[in-house]
Length: 124
Image (cartoon, one colour):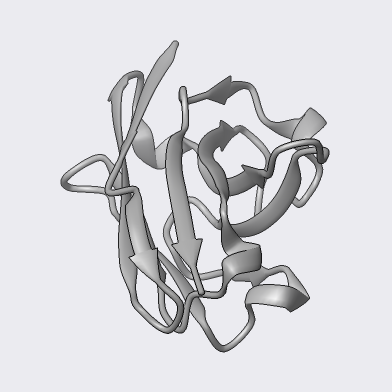
């Protein structure tokens, strides 16, 4: 079992930055690939970024490439999402999730544990 708690969301202006954190407790954090997803009002949940167990592999959705950076600190059981140059269309609830797959995965069906989410609101 893994418990995930996101933090770091908030309300910002377009062009600003935020760093989301996802703290994990429970089973060995380094056994899990981690991902970030988001869900905007009235839309389906979508993949944002993923990172492999040791942090050597990362993957990004096209709409965040060059703006967002995922990282992890296995000693702190935490995964991060640094979000720069935020746009109003980035407004959503952001979720972190844990997966036992090797490498990274964009498919939310492959994630076994989910956090409750943190709201990010970007105004123009």
